[in-house]
Length: 126
Image (cartoon, rainbow, N blue to C red; front, side, top):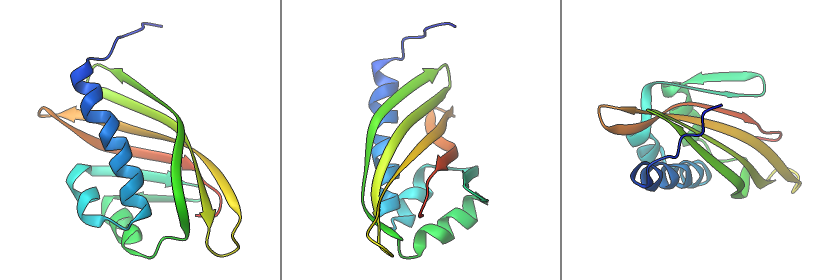
């Protein structure tokens, strides 16, 4: 495996995008999501795959959780693709249970701009 040292410039862009993704999810921020999701974006969670329009519609609905935070985030930049792996924790509103999820988000640099092209999560209770 080639260890490619990501540029600090790319990390300085991709890392905040990961934070924006999490905050936008927690706070129904459809506008912010629409700024960095690729037109061909796809998200997969247990039993569901959504395209960009379906995901934005879903995000507009009240969130079924609170206190979303991320841990153990690892960012790998491979040329024009960035993979972000992490673990999140949150509280399910329906029953107050604490849950944990794993996720991988994929960004691609298109026309000099990083956009999220794919998201995948194993996330019970969402």
